[in-house]
Image: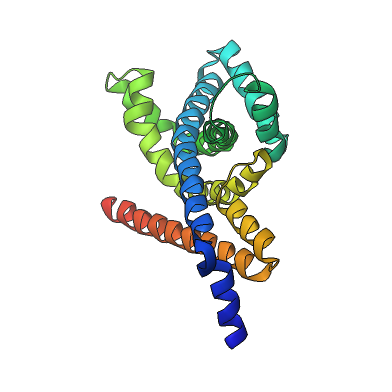
Length: 229
């Protein structure tokens, strides 16, 4: 037991090594939060374009670009997308690594969120759209006020799973030398030559964040169900 205490002190207390974890957590949360926000915006836009094309046949060119985007993003590894974004797209532009990571993860998340939203939109009964149009609402108004709210409730569990996956996927940010949470644990390991304590510590932090996010989503689902009564 004394040995575990000594290892804990050596890995986290000595030389304030806990700061690597703390600072890395801040970077991870910044990337995840912004990627979630922009991923939802991108995904919703792509889903609306593709759904509108499926139902009305409009936006053929936009629909082609959206299909190409989702195919490329979903068909290539996240790590590769991050490396291309950093070493190719932004290679000659002086932007921060955090910004590059946010762009890369936003585009990746947007592709998956778009398919989640699209499935939710298509799952709403067609009679809902007809009812909206019969009330004099335009297609856009019908989508915004009637279809999308119902679709959001239907896909909330899938969205929550995507957000949890995104949070964990940010751990590959170290490939562009970004000092995120996982990289913080790796830095401690390189200094203490002890892999167990820092890596388990990082795993515990990720687990806590995922549990908090899952609890929040469960509470939100409960409120949405109660609002339907």
